[in-house]
Image (cartoon, rainbow, N blue to C red; front, top):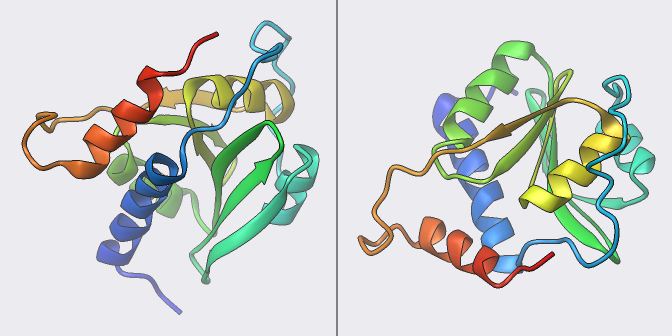
Length: 156
């Protein structure tokens, strides 16, 4: 099955919107951000989820992309794996328009709030990237405004 660009964009937007609607993970305690970053993890979606001790709830299971909501008692995030580097980069470029924080590895991406992504980096390695929002907060960009709103109450 081939995914069209529109389906990839919809998946990216849905991932960020889902995080906004369900709330961002992260709770008190050490976030692991100061630890040395390990070599970037590789493997299937299930392998990566097992590495960070979460059970993935698969949302998309296609040839080009597998995407899941991953949660454990202390955090919630989106984990996606890709068949190709190009597919990963296209998805990421589109998703970053919705804002958010991204941990990027070899054909995988984790999406969550900043604290969660920093913690995951301490476990999975990878590179952190931050999305940009081009929408005005009061102009009907519901997912952007909602996403920003869910973060405003977080504290260290």
